Amino acid sequence: MLGAVFLTVVEQALSSYQVLAAAFFGAIMIVVVLFEPLGLRGRWLKIKIYWKTWPF
Image: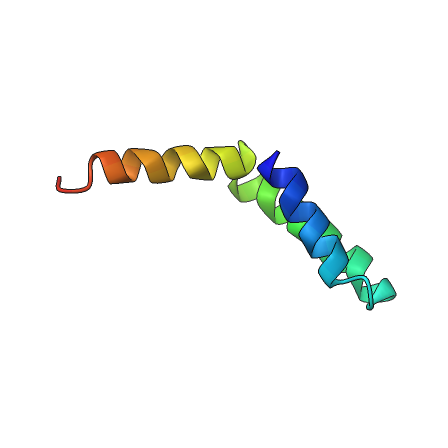
């Protein structure tokens, strides 16, 4: 659900740049798949684990 909201916001922000929007949208998708295979939920889980173990 977070991913859908993020992609909708990016699409709306880049709606005025038709040619650049498709390339940028594709680049975002590739970067997310490469570095965050679980998507935004995976990032959320990492943040939760970090804050639970924060004082080390």
